[in-house]
Image (cartoon, rainbow, N blue to C red; front, side, top):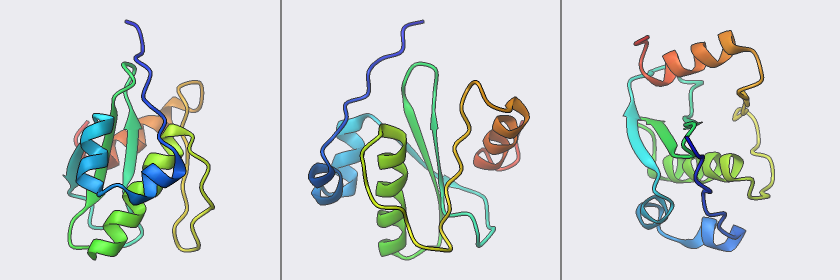
Length: 114
């Protein structure tokens, strides 16, 4: 299956476009995560097709949700943005990396379902 090229927005476009519009333009699938861990800020998964799936925890402030969602999209799309301050830390699991780590990340994003 051919991987489709995800459009790479500019930093200004990524930061200034209303988040729902940006998600729609990029064809991102957004869903609420059932993860309640206070250290979980969200996750983005790129499928083999190139589709991005963004999972965000519920019950967070609008500012946190918006900021983290944009940051995760920037990381996934290779848009150069400054690193987030602690306590937000990102981990990248590549297809060539540790598949056990990738499986665990997907389990957490899916709310524990295998």
